[in-house]
Image: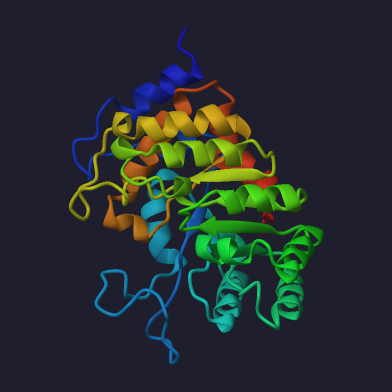
Length: 311
């Protein structure tokens, strides 16, 4: 008798020759899938957007319907949106969009934690249950980790039951320090801690991620693996084995409870098609205990982000 894992492996297939090769619906991976890292924006708005820049392939209107055209093929219809723009009004733009788009179950906004209006704006945005936290750059965290004002802001985040995403890490000591100083704050390392090409990971990255993972309030998104490869745009390897050094290290230190599925779409297109992301994530999840796929694809994100059910 074949187990669910056996059936999953058969459905995934052993190879993916091209980005167009069919891969299974996410319903075959887990009973539910939440993509915990997408970006939506519209450069044609009167005020434009600070990111992405003009001339970039990403410089185009990107809405939930565009993501659903890719993710929906795999049964993925729910996402946590992450704001890359530093414009305050873009937080409201996403929340207004989310009011109409039921596919958005949570939103990680972008506020400057050292700004004079941080506290009132945070409280205002947090009144919306879809607002689940903020994202900050690794440099911001490093520059402010010893600030009393910054610590108070992070404590307020924890008190409001919000999380902090950290992106663009180059040093891990600030993550460890924040996790220790504000133990009630849920910290989410984005993009596998910016590991770089999976075949060229460094001792600095390995030790930094291991040190971060020692704190139970730190978790990690498995995302951006493909766009970090040293390959031409859109030609990242499709074989899961290529990414195994990173996946194995994250599994060893974060375990089954603190890893989340995330695509980083549409930025992920720079590395490969959404199909490949689902394929690699599915093969990774299916290689572990039978219960891990459920945790990885949605239960962990519910515990960490505490996103809301849409009706």
